[in-house]
Image (cartoon, rainbow, N blue to C red; front, side, top):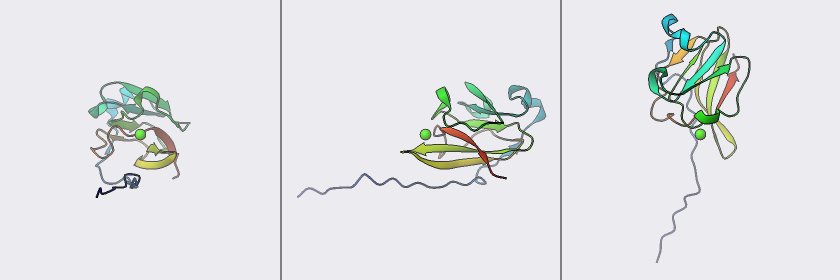
Length: 122
Ligand SMILES: [Ca+2]
């Protein structure tokens, strides 16, 4: 008798911020990400292909960097952002980045998953 295993269940885990150690944006590094901009990178330590995003808008897609983000920074001085993943139409927050903070590596569990960047309510 064959055993049937259901593979249809996907567990989503809301990973709040806080787990990885975010560091304040280093003034010397800000040249790579202009003020009032959110920047996403496909490499860690803000290397590789990058996409600068206006800090005045939320983005439902990250274009060529969709499912490729490894590091990001928020060079806005007042607005926090969500880095998120959309799975079958449902949005999951991968990480929250406070104003002025950077994350040099989002960590293995979040790596190469982000699809959107959105304003976080403060
Ligand atoms: Ca994704």
